[in-house]
Image (tube, rainbow, N blue to C red; front, side, top):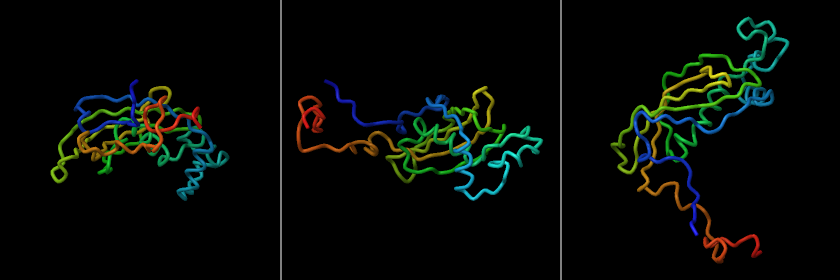
Length: 184
């Protein structure tokens, strides 16, 4: 029996400059997503929630444009599994570019390339990883991009491991200390 412990994402040791990560999930944007995020953030630009108003927008072809804050947040979220799942700090963003409008019904994907790595000068069990991330729509058009730096622990730091709860009871079926649902 092999126990596959609760672990996800990369550690500093796993990053190499030049590696490209095609993040595994896509996400289709609904009208609810767009309206909810726009209202949540207090953005009153009607191009994000009023179809009648947006009909006169020559840039959008008369369609509602997805709030760019939501676009950035969504593409960031898609990148987390590969870039910052185990990060302890988001250190900064530069060169954010909104290159193509996003509309309700678009499906977004993301990919990142590792552009730099270095050990932290103040935290020897951490490293700084810099990536260039871009979001793509279902047609492959780049819709957003940025450069981002995060602080990521090394595997030896032990951060992000060993958090899964263990029961006092043992289970022969699982061998993890967690009782089997069949034993309950």
